[in-house]
Image (cartoon, rainbow, N blue to C red; front, side):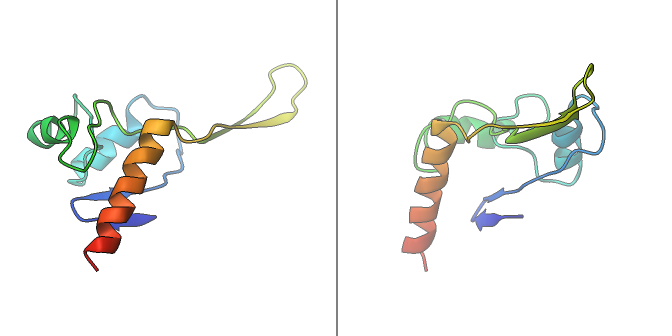
Length: 104
């Protein structure tokens, strides 16, 4: 867990397999569904979040692949591709950080 913001937490996960829905299923089974997950998530909470209950409306699943590493299929060279967090995710984190600081 990178940081806790009241009812939600920001986590970083390393995938061990390429199984579909791996993060989503395991998080939900542990009682920590992803914000905005319409298949495995907390549907009432997601509706509240979509309407701004966390400070800004967030109408999608909060899931991002920040880095992927693999071997090039022809050269065998190890490749690492990184992608920044999308703007809407950054905005939500900033609002959550501000609210957390105000509640200290």
